[in-house]
Image 1 (cartoon, one colour):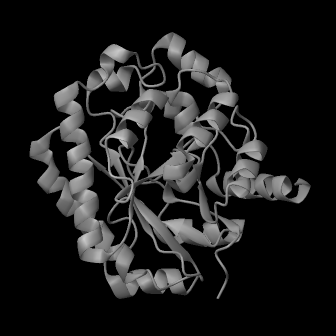
Image 2 (cartoon, rainbow, N blue to C red):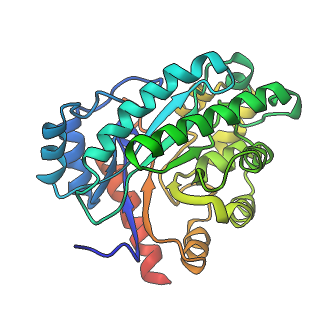
Length: 313
């Protein structure tokens, strides 16, 4: 059994083209084989139904490849109380899968990664990467949003014992640094943690200033239970903002690039995480849609880059 006292790197189906709102990319068996070939030992679940929903089959797919299940992303339209019950059922469906494979791997307990259902409301979709204060939730919206997140996290904990982390996400209602701070201030720190996503944080800040990522990580560190490593191409982000590309158009244009080719200061981020005692898994994400490149090549390059950082520190 491998200790979780050190940082380990996993990857996710989005790096092979299966991304919520974009459809399915490379078939799951090949994706898992390539993830292992690239050198990773942990994976997220991906969209429900991408991996086997039959528990013995899911366990077999992971166990045969010696993979740890890291977590699962699920988006819920949190600003609308009428959507909470249906969202809770979808999240619990995923949480049950996670709980059923939680004993595999290195002792890591998989996390439910809860997010707002991004790209649903046109103003947020059109202005992703350059959100202005007037596009934020009003008081009623914040109350519904945070109560929905807590309701779902409470249900997950009660039924499965798993923890829930919130994913700030461009194109959704909690994107900017100020919105993330507000969300955390209005939710129970014992119930809801944060997955800090480096690429979404930088793009959502409206800038390409690498220092913003470090400042955000330091400000939010007490609530960070999980981390996603995603890079942001500064030139593409600037183009997306200037041309008014939607979130999905920006992703399709390659705003999230291979690690080390963008503006996220990964050496400093990794150093900060180690210095502040983060341990366990960091999941690499690079949204590679069909036609954008070769997922195996990018996934391999991303891990080699991270290993190079570790070797130099």
